[in-house]
Image (cartoon, rainbow, N blue to C red; front, side, top):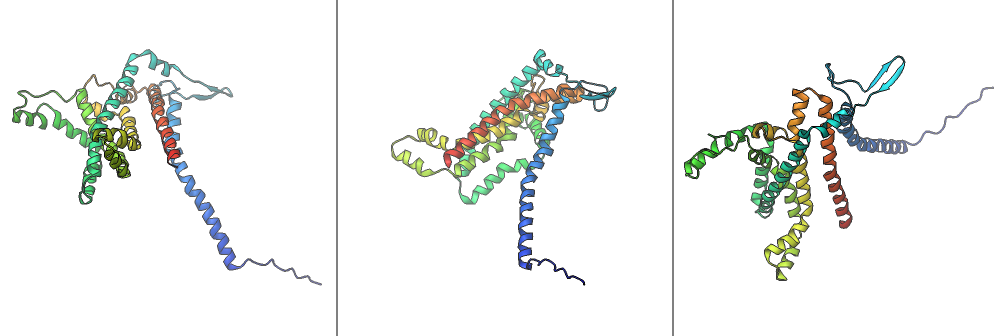
Length: 317
């Protein structure tokens, strides 16, 4: 006698579609969340770990020009960490001078960008709506061209028979050309020109969000415009100032192209030292140690800025 087994009841078509939609949405949400972390790991964490590993290796006449940290010989694994690369940074005063000069150049350039960028951002924020987009386009437009071409253009402007000296001599301001190219002044000019938009845009954003009723209240209470600016406007736009300063200071510390093309032999910045160690001396371990040390120095302002952002978000909420 045969028995008939009944199949389990299939879920309705509408319920199946709903279950599939929820499953797809759940996995899709996880994928969207995972993509930024995957991008950070592949493009930031992995290169950092590779450079960190090379900084503990020894120079070798091979390709790549450094030894392996982990070796396998006689059925044993050996780990060789070379700390001499980091000790060399403290023994040779060249590296300390390069770090200090890089911080000095980046700091002065940031201050110059702030002094020039704040009035420019103020002018853009208070311009007519019909011309505001044009002014913003003029601020951003140089960034659309090659960075190297812009630096070469400044070489043509600042050289002895360049545009600047020819104009000044034609106006009768000077009798002989000014020596600007291949000096520290040329480095400051190049860095300020290259990174000025990174200061203008955050300050402009902060100014557009400013509550101008507070400014009017300060003026109505008898405060002078200068006092109102420093006691009301500057504190309310402090977030844009700090963000712009970080966007200028951090990349300016490791700048290489501008000091190499516009600076002179006394423009010893850490970016030039890195280039010489990597390509001229082919000492990748020492160059990696220089890069790791520079990164550690830059972590301090980055962490401070992150702490300020969290505090500002808590105060705003």
